[in-house]
Image 1: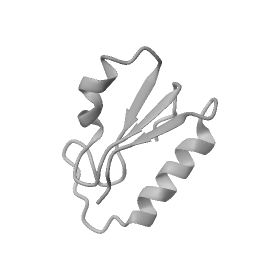
Image 2: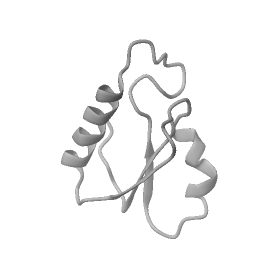
Image 3: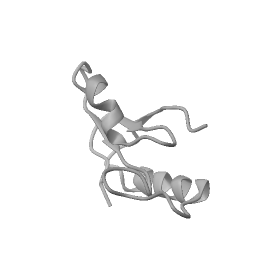
Image 4: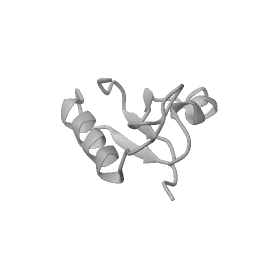
Length: 77
């Protein structure tokens, strides 16, 4: 599991991956980290991943963060 490093935690939309933030990250002036949610990202299959799985993953990331990040989220609908 990734450990959050940075002031911004960037979350992608439902059918996307962390890659969607690449263009944004290059323009930011503060540290930012984009993460893939369960079943998303390169070569992964969402299969039976639920919204609860994604929420649990986010909570785990936030608890493991060095400092509370600002969460920036893309649409999940």
